[in-house]
Length: 91
Image (cartoon, rainbow, N blue to C red):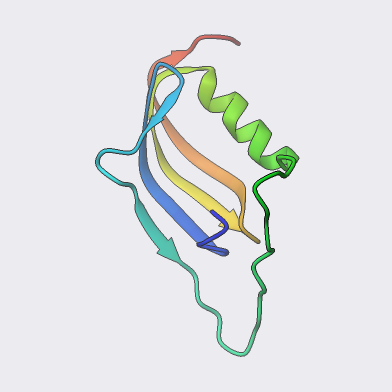
């Protein structure tokens, strides 16, 4: 998500609370001209931003499904559309 900066990931499958990366999801970057965005530098040790922690918690609660689109802004998850195949494990 940090590599995309602004854009979206498409067709991320979820199975038993884990994202499947085979096949690799489609990555679409939004490009705006005459604007700049500097990707934050990260070291090996960093705290997860609340948006990322919330995304991971949501994914862990899904038995099976597909994230149709995961919108990314400033390198962080912003919103998503998800198709629920097996429902959520927890309400």
